[in-house]
Image (tube, rainbow over the protein chains, first blue to last red):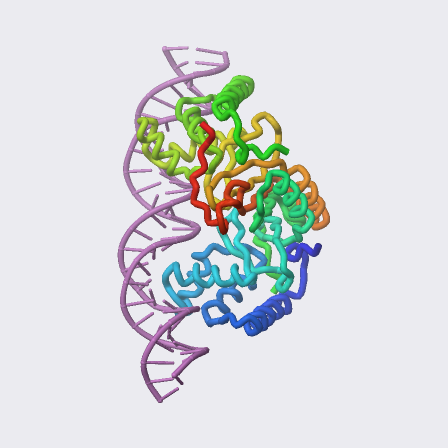
Amino acid sequence: MPAIGFQPHDHSACVDGALSKAQAHCAALGLRMTPVRRRTLEILLAEHRALGAYDILGVLSEEGLGAQPPVAYRALDFLVKAGFAHKVEALNAYIACAHLGADHTPAFLICRACKSVAEADTAPAKGRLDDAARAAGFVIERTVVEAEGLCPDCQTDTKAEGTKAKGTTP
Amino acid sequence: MPAIGFQPHDHSACVDGALSKAQAHCAALGLRMTPVRRRTLEILLAEHRALGAYDILGVLSEEGLGAQPPVAYRALDFLVKAGFAHKVEALNAYIACAHLGADHTPAFLICRACKSVAEADTAPAKGRLDDAARAAGFVIERTVVEAEGLCPDCQTDTKAEGTKAKGTTP
DNA sequence: CCAGTTATGTTATAGTATTACGCTTGCTAC
DNA sequence: GTAGCAAGCGTAATACTATAACATAACTGG
């Protein structure tokens, strides 16, 4: 389970790849990848970090793509429904999907020091949760699995109070 | 793993028990169970549902226990830190702990129809998540595991659009 | 009692999200 | 092509969630 986001990698390839996969997915399903939506996805893809809706809105509005909250929320809703992005509930923020294409349930590892977020695979955890739910007669439709803590880089920053703003490996 | 909340049970005993356990725990650790805090816990215990901070505040203010948001948030922070309540991140709401005393990581099963919330045991799911985190070199400090779906009662309400406001088994 | 800490009261403000309504755009059927 | 319809966007207003900051009061330990 590659926890992309904590390791150096070819980020521009990772962005381009995701963008074109999303494009293709839209074409295949008849979804409309409009300018606001595409730009919103680009903004999210630019970092392995969760961004608040108003962070997105700030960028969009600078670029003349919309100035009111619903613009950002509508784009984010689209991306989330389409599976191109996820909402990180513990942060009330949004992040681009790191496993585009795979029909998956995401799990997030959130670093409280540098704020980076990695998307891991939850299949195992979800299996156990399903068991518990089944025992209770509950039918799961959506799961939220998130963990807050320290990423590998921030653990070494003496006493774990690191403030380093981790780059996006440009 | 008893998913209390979806089954009928002796609710007043469950409230009284939790309240006195909390009281005892405070006494043992030198924590102060003040009127606002106790009342907040009672309000949460009254239902197996998550309540927003402002729902709590509404009740407190009717009772002359405080009228401004910080009153509710401070009480909730205390209860959460003490382990008497949990925050349900997917709902931005708070719920009384159903397993008081146990040092646990909660998992919630949230019914989208009747809004009731059951607290299950996450130990297994958490174990798997720990494995994933360890593989990524991430150190977990807190986990959030929540599932939205339909509780046993609401699945039978034709096409799952039930609106029944499930009682608290008074 | 006094000093220090912890809790509460209150004002103000920040951050997150939605409702509602009207206009525009793009697609489909004629 | 154009009428009708659905989807998307622009905007204003508002609701909901949460915190900062500072003053006052209450409990604690010496």
